[in-house]
Length: 350
Image (cartoon, rainbow, N blue to C red; front, side):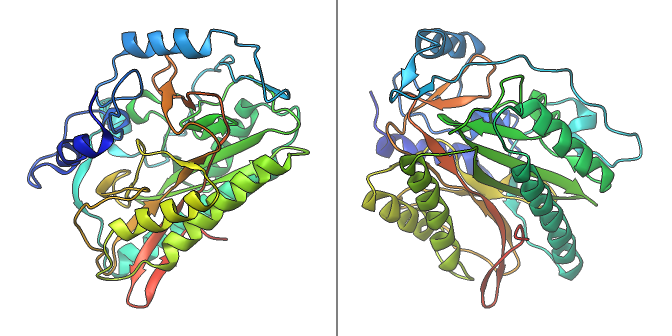
């Protein structure tokens, strides 16, 4: 069994590769680090993910965690929502091809910066609106419908919809779901936490953001996890600026998580964002020694995922939903930032 440290150089090079080429692998497969054993890997087949689902998620689906909540299980997924013909769609939607990671940084001129600000503002507004809908009894599918409609009404396209086959317009990750939860028929319950991950494509530019919200009366243990996760993102953004090494992001997040003995998920990363949904750089949220420095006028996301228990992910057989191995809670926050001469501007704040 290879360790993460021994695997990182090979996997990082497969992310970045030769700057003159574009990867043909689906992003949802590329954006993982293989920690070995039965966890999420670089080339996770549908058969293998079905096995992990059987082993970890269909077994004891009504098991009560911490004497309070039931283990998360899939609900029914409604049909894909339509998008009006006049809405400009990202190229991956029209091509019907699985997207790859785009090599090269997202660096913008004055016009591009204003476009990024516009898409970021809309994404933030949608995120905050979605958060107001969180209450016991509402389904994540109803949140998806509201998000979808708001994005469309503002002349934008919901970037996740059709991305590599993703069937919905937003990601909704409840309790032990680390990321990429598919909205479905499950009603939220009192005491749940839910991450809502919004990306909009407006006038040719993506704005990407997420936040974790409380549903009803949430216990102090969950509240603290969410609070510390948000703090780790804020601390990471505070050290960003031209010439700063990307690896400092991972160190400050990991250091803060360690103070509270939280796990830091390694398999899913921040990324360049702008004219394409996912681009260089790959932003690691844990301590690392990878090379690279921030550049003036570039945009990328930082999106730490912290866990109370195991940081090891298991994927459901929908090939998207990723949960903690032990069903412990996970929280995430994300912003798109712009590197400025004075540091970093958060593009996805309200």
